[in-house]
Image (cartoon, rainbow, N blue to C red; front, top):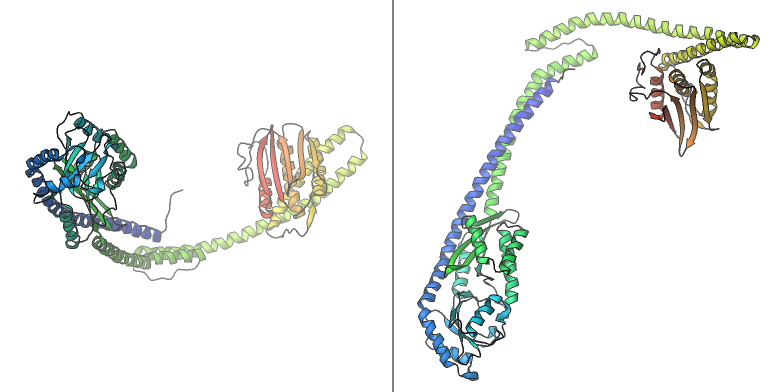
Length: 624
């Protein structure tokens, strides 16, 4: 069968495909334009971050200049610090006051005393007193080298102090008596300069909502606090934990997954890598910047860095957070233009589609409607093919109606003949049955009795076929109703007795297991059709003498089963179809089980066919 489709559906399909094509084209244009708008927004704000970076770099360059310029002077101050030490009478405040008499242009000096347990026991910078510097392995090695005189003066790389937020460079020497370590810190007061610039940029740079500055060393990440400074200086272990948190936040925002971040943290703990090195690699891979756009949070985050600010090490990370309300507004305007354009185009195409439907498809639909109703077509159309179709239809309609009238007359006559014939069969069948019963009661010859039993069996089968045909011919006229519940048990017994002659003639035995008193609301004639057709088939197709009929109650159902030995039914899904016969060599009308199916469907009786232990089982479930 070839695939067919209505003309108006073809027009609709064309309309739909064109709409989809236009939507895809416009949507791709929308996506492309959105990407350009987004990229332009990012590029514009990246330029802002470069300007921010340059302004902070100016401050860092100034710090580096002073660190280099003051190197020799700071070493002289270390020598002075050793001269000021007089056994246990040394005071950090007094020493710092003397060293700061000639105060540098940018910065000042702080003095610390560290014992052999790596603990700061005195300091001019009071927050450091009590600080345990031995908590970090790398620091312990530095202190041990100075204590053991392997290193005369240890000069640290510049650090960002987590409390004062100023840059400090430490000079570490052994006290003359060898009991303590004397530490001089050259402090550059950079916090006020950075905070002033930070506050100014927040006001001047468009859309800049937040500006974070991170100072990265080998093992520490210090975030410059532009709000309230901490109440006290935290321990090195606490600084380390805070550094891990800052690294985790920064690396996650830069796109690293949790496992990779944890792997890097372990490498830093083992001394195999450093925080500034890892961040440098990430930035280098992303061309010195990491950009994260999140329209849901309404923010654009850009990471930039000033690398190698002190001695080729240390990194200053600048995290700029911009508000994306302007970008969202532009994208929304673009989206609205896309929707309006698409809507206008679709409306235009829809109008064309409706015109085609009205001028072409509607005429054809009208002709089809008239054909269905068998009415003449009277339409005016400018399409030649439709006009020709109309004329041909009207011509053939007239001829066809004449033939239909003839055929209806013949069909009614045939149906009347079949019904009359079926009813005329009933009387001869009744006469034959009564005479067989009479003859059986009079004769004693066993051979004649056997012949009479075969005749009786044939008459029984003929009666079953007659009752099927009678049911079919009357089904459209006679209304079979279930007015009350009938006794199924008695009817099944009665029909088994009725088919006893057939089973005996075919050398079959009907073994029954009938539970007494089972009733159900069904028409008696229709229930007999179910039983008779199943018994007839079982006798006809069983390859062994025994046939089993069971009627019993199971839970809430009445179960009726017919079991007979034979080959497994190949296509059980077809056995209830009209005119289907599993064995084509067996003669029959092929309507019995189809009648059974119609009756079951009428009363909601569930039926199934299955094969079990060499028997074909027909099972019927009557719901109570």
